[in-house]
Image (cartoon, rainbow, N blue to C red; front, side):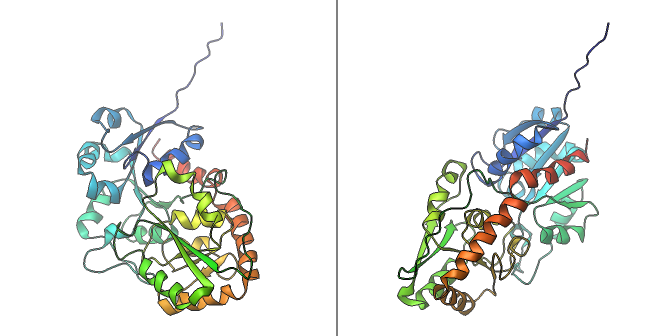
Length: 320
């Protein structure tokens, strides 16, 4: 008599920040793909228990969220560092007196380096962050942030020359004040006169309102990112997936996503740099149309979750 033995999949525990916030959204997006190789459990920082971590085969948590906002998570995972992958999602929490800028990266403080080096693997969400992490940790890997191309896909173009060019930005300016560059964008648009209108989407980005964002992107012609630092900008991906090209500073993974002059434009972080490019595009709308088409195609081929998820799975498998 043949015996059929069903092999159980290793348990992967993904620790999110807060339900419906940024890291939780990433966890939800990854889960359908990770389930091919793992039994996936998601817990928020506030719901996490010692038992959750003890029973998992592989644990994933995001350094900068947990270390600063949810210290109780650190206490829970401390005995289980050998089976934990640490996600490095941002440059922001590496900063002390020196700030990260588009042209300058900052190493973490020594206490953070010591903590990160106690884990077997670091997972960075951009090549820029991975390069930084590799300077102090021998096993740092890249697993990029993706976009749901079922929700965010090419939208009808709204470009007509008689109408003002509508420039967009999405986020919460009170989150890390001074980092986002909202004032810089407002001034650059103001200097362009009545040829250009600024239409920001102000607020926290949460899973609950993610499905309403395509309506916002359909109402703009061009997206702007003027941050001084980013890990991986979600709105950049979404806007490009919707066929809205982006003007961005050289922050985070913008240099990986945006093909300068083809699917968007990379510029210095100055009012004049943004003003000049916006004004040029306002007078040459066909360039926006072409770049938007390139952007949407590029995101669908290289940055959708079905393409990105195997990068995450391969890192988690290293600890199985």
